[in-house]
Length: 189
Image 1 (spheres, helix red, strand yellow):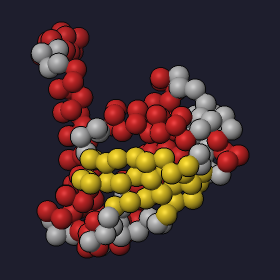
Image 2: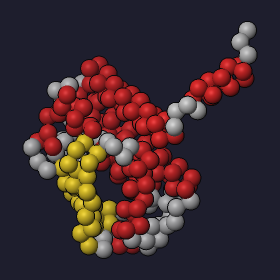
Image 3: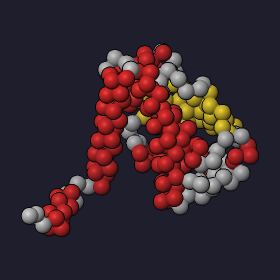
């Protein structure tokens, strides 16, 4: 019979050799690897349309849960402006996968902002396996989950659909908040 506490102690001693930043990067890579393999398994078994639909649903729902957990864990204040939201968005991206996207954010006015994505891990992965022209964006489905979890009412343009990069278009999304939702909504409600 194995002495589980002793085994766990030895395992933890080995894990401490990995600096926190490397451990975090490894966990993110493992999660993204799982995500890609899950998507491909669903696409192969049930078709790309089903894989896209399930991926967007799962990404949106995951976005809601992770935003609530992270906001609570960091005790972030209510969101009362675009700048407040963009800080939360940057915290989420910084924790969940800062190297997965190269992008810039532009505040359009006091109620709108744009995200310009230059490089996207999802587009790279689906391009690698020859599915880019059929892939529907899951990255922004996750962001809509964050927005919903934070109680923010918004309009997104364009709507979620086929990968913009795969269509030869610029990956550019505009989010416009309804002003009343920027009046101190409670994060992670």
